[in-house]
Amino acid sequence: MANKNTEALKQPMWVNNPVLVQILGICSALAVTAQLKPAIVMGLSVTIIVAMANVIISLLRNTIPNRIRIIIQLVVVAALVTVVSEILKAFAYDVSVQLSVYIGLIITNCILMGRLEAFAMQNGPWSSFLDGIGNGLGYAAILVIVAFIRELFGSGTLFGFQIIPQCCYEAGYLNNGLMIMPPMALILVGCVIWYHRAKNKDLQEK
Amino acid sequence: MATKKFKCKVCGYVHEGDKAPEKCPMCQAPQSEFEEIVEEGAAKKGLNTNSNVYTILYAAVMVIVVAFLLVFVSQTLKDRQDANIVNDTKQQILSALNLRDLPDVAGKYDQVIKADALMQKDGQLVEYKGQFNTTYKSEFDKGNLHVFVAEVEGQTKYIIPMNGLGLWGTIWGYIALNEDRSTVYGVYFSHASETPGLGGEIAGLKFQNRFPGKQVVDGNEIGLKVVKYGKAVQGSQYEIDGVTGATITSTGVNTMINKVLSEYIPFLTNVESND
Image: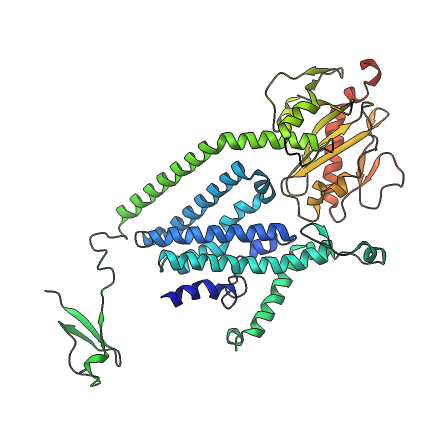
């Protein structure tokens, strides 16, 4: 049992990564990765909310009527997101201003519904919690990788600090405008998936 | 008497009875190869989770619980949130005076801002008596043209709130003018949903620092212009480079400045009569 729990936590980090293998949460991965800071905050918020929603759904899983289970899951997620957003507005106003629309976007993140439906409906609260943490962190890791590349080459900064020295610009170096655009995020995610498949041969389609 | 079911793990034969048979009649596997089949849902008997009544009741209870939870959270936190919004608005106004990231916003605001005034048709300022506003778009639409009178290092500054549209949503800002009502002292811009790294840069200092020292009024018109990046005439008193790669947002800032400040023309050109 303990082994299964560690697997629930570890698997989604790399081997069964939600973005790379399950191809969940792509939409928000494109939207928030132009800069590192929102990417990290989004990754952490999703982690917390997936874990909490997983626990709640897991506790309710035997009572939820089968025919309306998706709606119940959605209600739980939406309620959690709203509560978190309200709390941020009251106690961490700066953060909530920076996150603005992203907090609301968490509701539409497919990772949440995917994990609730695929894992929490069948498993106990503790392993569901670990599964939520694992998937959230796996998602956050990809966001950070993509955002790192996009911010560095798109704006020449990291966390808003200038990284590429001024002399490079004077020598004719230009920021790559395409990096800031959402399509580039898709291409970068594609590159990471490529690397991931090359490392995990059993995932390759024959 | 409940009959139990046993399944042969080798061939799948199902035996009904109190215990597993000694030998599988199909494949002759020993008793140890049999395992008991536990009826699923036996524990849930008496509670049919698929019935209509249960489904409707469940949905109703769920909705009521969630609704109460949200109302409770929203009501308990409302005062704090409102205070935060007021504080944030004051910080934005002070940011136009280049007083950014203050530890005590409310205190500094009371110290620096001398009056929250309304501009009359003839350009005179009359003190505004109502409650402190946090959105100036509705005030502008109602014709309440706010001007904040501030005093920084002994000099009078005027701050005008602005509202407009960017590429994806609303943008807003505050512009602080010197006593001559034309020279820009400082600006602050913010936005609801402009693209981070592109249009979002209007909220950055790199863009906002291009404003101080420029002139707003050109004769009887608003001369201040935000133009496409790189197109501003060198040494121009009026033209400001927009943000690279964010032409629509920059145009939005330009339109906002022009539209809002045009309404303030009587105040801006009313320099002599006020002295």
